[in-house]
Image 1 (cartoon, rainbow, N blue to C red):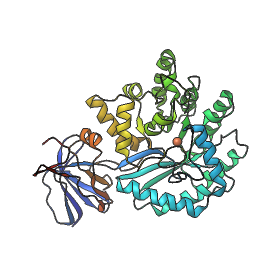
Image 2 (cartoon, rainbow, N blue to C red; image 1 turned 180 degrees about the horizontal axis):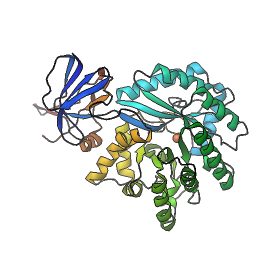
Image 3 (cartoon, helix red, strand yellow; image 1 turned 135 degrees about the vertical axis):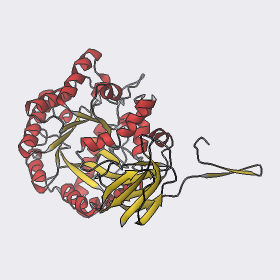
Image 4 (tube, rainbow, N blue to C red; image 1 turned 180 degrees about the vertical axis):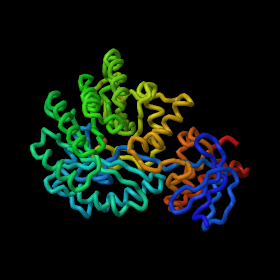
Length: 423
Ligand code: FE2
């Protein structure tokens, strides 16, 4: 007997399907499937997708908004300073509590895989210990990948190198970095080289905060791509943020993007955060400060999107909705063509899964039975409406149900309903 039979759904490519699940895997996909199932779910002709994937987040800082005070300037640098004020007062219990509260929001929105950076610039490594425990505790529901992130600079903080090694020894999954926060351009490049060598020696993936600045001379992505090639790490490295690319000279970018493509370096953009943090030193016109999503995608580079922050020193808003992230990318990067809107849906699903090297991700036979049914007919409508996650399914079990959103109107005695789709 099947564990679950999802009936009457439509894939992102528009194919009507039923999906049969057993022992945590998809065992059959096709029209009008037969068979007894412990649970049958009628998708009502709505869109089914593999779960949303957040490829860039900070779970150690989430839901700490206002502690100990609010970011007044709205800049990245004040956010880092503010986090530095909070760090000495952190406890494992408080970090875990906030992380678990956050995970419930993520699950409720159908996000079942998260790559979270964890700050290792704390001699106690409290956040590392806390999030390693959360990673195990939340495993039945979320695939949580942790990145060793030297927030205060791998070279700039004299203790960071030792602490990063200890964090990796404890089981943190991915090597991080922040070259633009080092003291000089040379130190930034040196930090990239050192961190890439650690990743190569340990056989780990890499995801660095890279060039998160409006300074067009911040070119650490170039070093990251060259080191990827030198060490044979193609397909295993991501550059997060890459906002300086927004301000770079077009001629230089025409050399840089092919280098990134050749090196197989993925890009991770965080549009909610960078549209608010970047350009703060500008008068008018104010730069948007997002990386060149359109050009990177056109060059065949994997571009995924991250939420980055929810209610923390850098960003006061958010409820962890990856469709909100994709919606902002569509607007701020002008990805408004029909194919481009679909690419932004893929940037929070399939492309992000590839960047994170997730196993068994997808809607094919043999993939994990992790599914989300949205109150929408297509990826286009999903981004337009950011609709209810009617069902979130993990390992063949329904773990979230959300009532469809329908507004009931009473217009001068004439009653009707709207769900914001074209009837
Ligand atoms: Fe970040």
